[in-house]
View 1 (cartoon, rainbow, N blue to C red):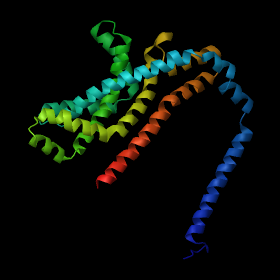
View 2 (spheres, rainbow, N blue to C red):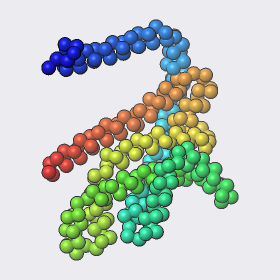
View 3 (tube, helix red, strand yellow):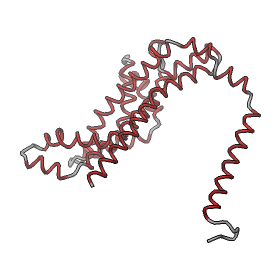
View 4 (tube, rainbow, N blue to C red):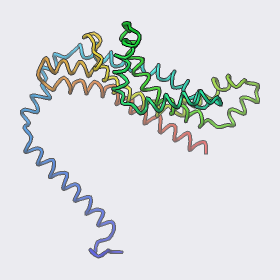
Length: 269
């Protein structure tokens, strides 16, 4: 039925979309005329500067970013599993400790965790701590607090019938947990864990704040140093593209895992 304007619902929706497209075109045209394209190209897309960044940005910065992320993710998975099991424990103090850890580190900005680990641990213990260990601890602490809740949800999502079947075969509670529950839980939580990995790739840029030599630099710090050297934003653009080399395949993997998980869930209904 037509409204007061004499237009049907479909016509009003089409008109509304047309207005939005029109506004978008106007904004793009205004930006195109107002922007200083010559300065944008020379500042952000200087191919001579970009060429001078290679191969160091790949063999040093990109490699270090991947290594730091992998170490932090591995540490986070191990601690996350322990925390998840503590949250599910029947022992009260275990649950309280795990809850306090998770809520504390989820509530803090990742930058504060990096600064606390990077400068707090050497100060507290009065000794030099290996930089790779500091990075692994900082990234792992940030990751584990989030992974723990994801893993706990995955464990709780495993059908109780699977546990009962394993116990009926004579498996001990520990063996049931290790061989039946945790493997199935990880199949369930692979998509959100992949998302955590993507977030960790970006969090690795915080390594910038604890300093490093050229051989230890990751992408963000490499780009910042190159910015000072070449007085151009091009290094940041190239560093951003290198991050995308890591994160886009991971995003595609996450989407495929989600589709597979949804198809499996529908097939099981």
